[in-house]
Image 1 (tube, rainbow, N blue to C red):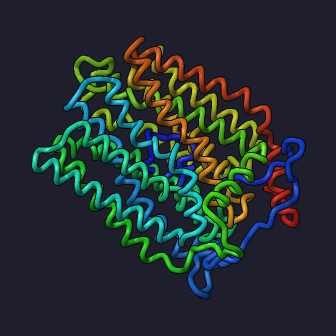
Image 2: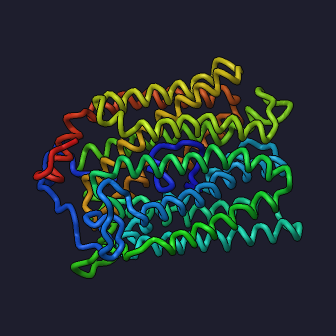
Image 3: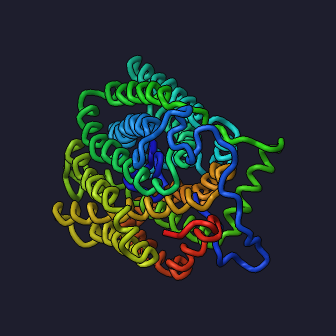
Length: 467
């Protein structure tokens, strides 16, 4: 998802957005090929888990499309919530630190609950875990609506709600990303992820933000009631996804042992470890910028002087770029060198934030946001599909959660840093520092080459040709 600030990297499944063994593992680590699959009902070998019903060649199957529907509804709810929260908060305080703190509360659970969430995703039926997480979100946000109606809402109530939503997000997102190889075949993953990302970005960042601006004008209760209904509808769609999506377990283990196994797998694969760190740097910078962007853009005293609905529309530039990127990502992966492509997406991200330092021209800012959105989406589709290809199913939830601990655990730190820098030195300092952080990612790209990617894929699936 909610999905944190607009277009964070690896934002799949709300995202978002698994990895495989790296042939360039450090000395002393294991390099054996790992088994690709365990016995799973509704696994990718039988694409949609539809209990023996034949799936036409090339079709993603009805289970995928119900999952797609549920994800679209959930992400529309998230897109409304992530804009509604700061817009309502601005009515309660103009403190940059307190405003940025809401993003901290939303993302802090990834530091503390990501690993247990991954272990649960590998133990439970992943579809049912997603249903349970959404039901909790419905209950919590409905409570906020009631508190607003009875005029007992405050900035601290918003903090509590944001924290609860963030906790459920760790379970939902990890399960959603891990279920995909059980729903479609491995060769369909780039297309399936691209379609899913297209829907998620359209709803989360193209439709949700401007809709949130309109709903916020109608009142805080209305703005928060809309996600309640959307999450409930998402649960209904998940109930129509056929099959069981629980990975078969050959032995009983403790949660601690499960978590340790997933972390070892991730840490011993240099390629995956490097990608996780690079995503962490991106999300640190993105959250620092987006946590305080509302202060730069909204209000007569701000640099851009936008209204709340206009701010939501500006955010759709990123979403539009992401939508374009989601449709061309599969073609980009087939056509261009994957290592150089990933490096190019980093440069585009630096342009997205750097433009805020040098101009207040809305057209240039919107164009840079479009470019950054497309680049982030291409990165997400390429790296998430890579992880899903090379991580065995029985480890996918834990590896995804460990990856996201490194990748998303930086989000609350970035949001906090953005608030502090803005308070002490001004908003332009935030944008400049975070542009430099993104450019520094290019140093880490020395180990993310096409040859390293191909070697990892061949190690995970030695009998199949690499892409």
